[in-house]
Length: 182
Picture 1 (tube, rainbow, N blue to C red):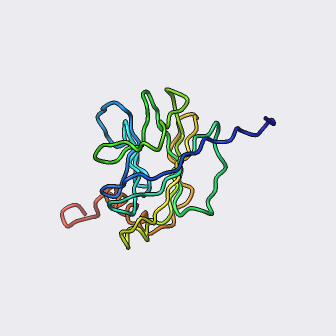
Picture 2: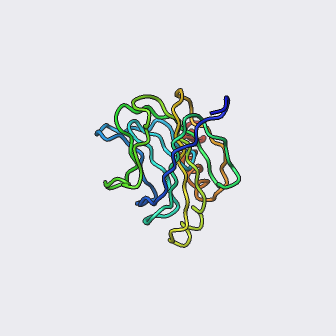
Picture 3: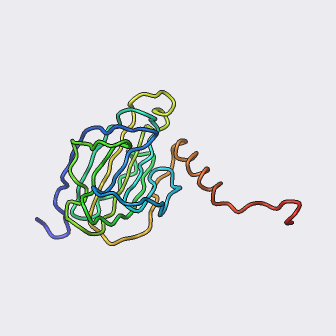
C-alpha cells in the first residue's frame, strides 16, 4: 500500500425496510433512548441508536454500506443530503428496521470493535419517494473509526429534509411576545 492511501473499503449493498419514515442503527442491547442531537433532517442521534429519516413511509430503501479504514472522500454530487455524526459503540452496532428485525445483508457497523465511529449518511430520492410512495430512494452509510465530534452537515437540498429542519427549528424557538409578557 502506498503512503497516504487508505485500503479499499468493504462494501455491502442491499435493501432495508423503512417504517414510519425511518430505519435504525442501534446497539444489540436495550438502552434507554434519549435524543442527543437532531433537527438536521436526515439523521437523529439518540443514546444507543440513530434514526435515519426516509422519504418513503413504508417500503424498501436501496442501501450501500461502506466500512472504511479512515475518513472517505466527500462526494456531494451524487447526493441530495449528506450528514456526518459520531457514535460510541460498546456492543455490536447493527442496521435495524423500526419494529425489529435486522438487515441480514449487512454486517455490524462497528467493525473495529468498541469505540468511537463517524457515520456519514447520504440520501437521494426522498422527495420522489415521499410523493409517489415508490421504492426510488437510495442511501449510503459510510463508517470509519474516529474521535467523537459534533454532527456536520455537508449538503441539505431536498424538500423532505427541509420540512424536518423547519419542524425542529419551530420546537426550539423561544415563544414570541404576548400581551402578558411584552
